[in-house]
Image (cartoon, rainbow, N blue to C red; front, side, top):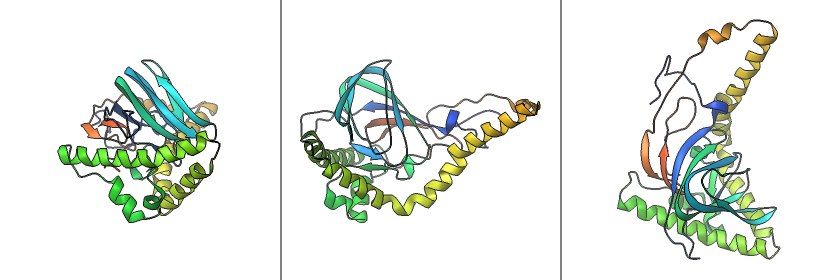
Length: 253
């Protein structure tokens, strides 16, 4: 939990970003690669800050297929619509900074499942949702989910490498159709999170321009610690933070 003055009020991290820590999965997939579940985000840019180990992030975008090396101190980020797959190379550990905190947990992240799964919202939800807890049943479901996402991903990657962007673009369209009904809820999260944070900065600039720094009287500090350790995330075991006004409780979706 967050501690500090008025800790119950929304005091987000800078820019209202989301924060989590990931230890990349070391499960081997059908193509012999160890790593996480390929997916994209519809409206959020995501950044990896590597804090330990080695690995890579594989991406699919209009630029084609890329394999970006990850090592301590390196940073990689990808914009909405970029399919990304975290690859384990040995002890890979990453701090994730996520734009529009709360939106990925609310469904902004869509797995690269095969087209027939993406076309059926109930089938997609059944494949994407994990059982509660962190026991063997949850691990088995997370592995099945990863394998299904890799199945769809490999088809997209092969086509894109051959110069055919059609399947990749159709996946983007399918993902957009899948989440369309969630957009009103996302908009409210954005308004009360990232937009509100930016508007506070605007109000502060206005105050400074008027020669009135009275808002600085509210200056203070906050602290927090992970509120859940070792959950099963999309890319690996996930430590999360329940921060006021930002990250929602992780639901494995």
